[in-house]
Image (cartoon, rainbow, N blue to C red; front, side, top):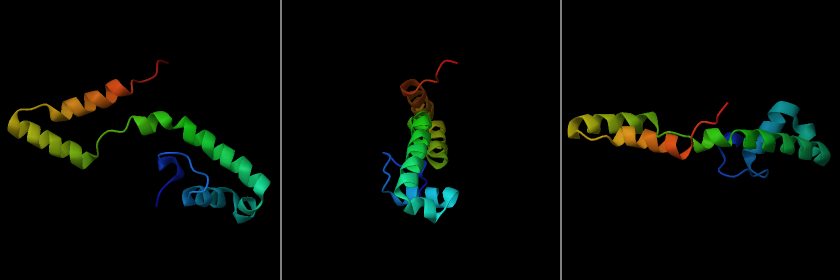
Length: 95
């Protein structure tokens, strides 16, 4: 089941948005268009706040382990290069 934060683009018509509103606030709030608009704005703000986390996603654990295995067999640095690319493309924000 997809979480609304996992969408590539925020889409208030997506079923994950409906599920989130109904689970947090109830079906009555979803049916009330004024309340729904406010809840959608809240979810959109949460979605926007998590953009950095979506951008800085590493390959899956399975893919990383596969890269590490083949790096060891072939003497390459595929895994280190993949991780370095994600870090270089999406540097941590200065605090």
